Image (cartoon, rainbow, N blue to C red; front, side, top):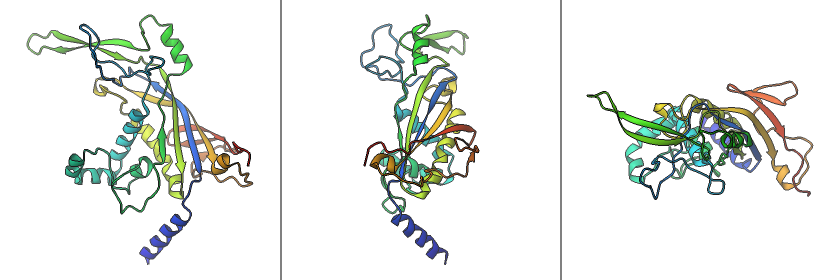
Length: 287
């Protein structure tokens, strides 16, 4: 009886599957401590800095690659989920042979949000639901960098040493570039809705945000680097009609309203975050 109900639910889900719209998450990523996301040094000069941060080639300023943010969010969400953790542990040898790192079970929340490749039997179908854009520094941060004497090209220089255990002296100083604390970067994430399950999974992005705030972004996290938090978060709902030009009288909410919403439904609370809701219901193109 239970299997029949489950199969019926899966069949209904397949019938109703299709692009429903996008939810855009915008806000700020704020550095609470120095941030180091490294770049490769193809030509290291004598006496030069051997730990450079990654920079935008056009502006020559630091940024947070979407791949770095997305990878860390997925990593933390997988380790916080019993199903994905179990799969990774049981399939570890297979992972090593294939050179894979992320869970590929096709059934856990992380796979449903971030995508998977090698699970043909998985019932969850469709493209990767999330797009994480590169996060560039905002205008206030660029002004802060420009007007600070100790900051060059958006970074400060921190020198680290190793300690000689016998003599108790510092040796082998190693200069490292890092983005200074209080710097802010523009957050831009797109989450696509194809089925009702996506509406439920949407909240897990904010759970990953909370996990990241108690972890670190980039390198050298155990030495105090990379503490960040998210602020000024907004949600933009863009239903399918926004892109097709079709006008609809009844606008379906693209995420489940089981969150704590304000009376005018212009704000909601997801986890610890108070979020402004903005709707793009007017068609972008005329039909």
